[in-house]
Length: 144
Image (cartoon, rainbow, N blue to C red; front, side, top):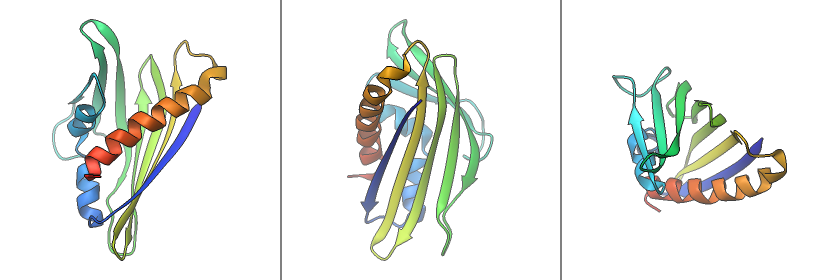
């Protein structure tokens, strides 16, 4: 399984960083050749399901996910969101935390990915590519 972490400190209030991070369609707009579709109604929370479709035309794959933990940040408590990846091609999980600080907040993103058909020997390459793509998306979501 490929694992990577990304961390950013931003001058946003924790609630605003959280709002941006849980805008699921915005994630897809920031990753090349990806579109995110929310499959459930209502506000984001535990049970929210969405799919990130990556590809061009008929060539591509779906990355269906479900939110299994959704604790927005509150005074003195960090926000934590955990997603599980439920697809045939992509498995794993993602966790992000939003921690309030004097000058804004710190965002930590951790991802565990397994791609069907990709041997474990290529996990370091997958982690490097994932870190780069997700860092770009995270910077875009947070306005960096």
